[in-house]
Length: 239
Image (tube, rainbow, N blue to C red; front, side, top):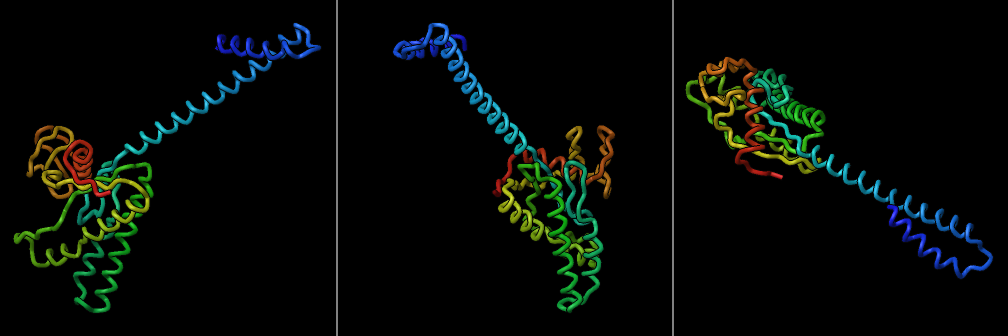
């Protein structure tokens, strides 16, 4: 900056030489004042540029935050950060299964389910607004296995993954986060700590790894695997 000040001083001295009535000392003072003013102005612009770049970098880092979501029956949404949403849906599914199809009570129960799903997804989003990516399983259809009882299958078919996805896709479009679908294979059977895949390690709501000995909530364990698969593995970008 000393060289810039000296260059400015020389230029201004040339201008002042044509001005009559200005002493040498006055000329030097004017030159120095003007030069310092211009340097301060340039420094101010430089500082603003640095601040703008810092904010842009912070925004990029913020947008790189991701959340993995396991969509299930007992817990509608289990998140990779340990939070759970929509546990009340299981009771609503039970209520729907007891209603006569196409009856007014049946339709009211379906509406209650849809509203509960919307509220759960919205609450999830409100608590994860700092995430630039939401990663969820790509469950195109759920196949009901014959080993389940007829009564349980009747409840299970009231679980609506499609409505959950529709709500996520709608929020993704309006709020601007990226929604990513990943294949569900082995996400519930894999230990997120040691990466071992063992179907027998999942025991209902608990995942107890027979290799490393870790014990976790089974849905949270799956959500962490979903997160990693979305960040590091193959997936479909929805928006």
